[in-house]
Image (cartoon, rainbow, N blue to C red):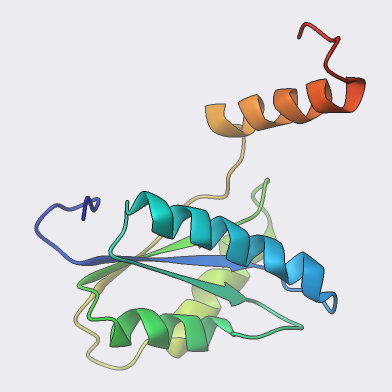
Length: 134
């Protein structure tokens, strides 16, 4: 496995808001499955802040039970806001057992990362059809 810290077992916890629509929640699981196939992390889990399961506490517990020595919590939000700045850190803190040994880091939201910009451009091109030279 190729993990962010080569000698440590690393888990990734993807967190979104959550939806009452199963197909909306499925997108996060699809992203997780793609990351699992790439084997960039030793373990990949998903969690929803609200309206669906697994909860952040359940996702964090899965990561801990996987034997992770470090956990990256990745908010799946485009812009920084209350959820990524306050709610997710609070939910993670509430769910972290006392004396927890694994290091837990919370990533920044996706923002204007080059990959997001490329994805937006690709989606725009798709919307216009294959004749577009963007």
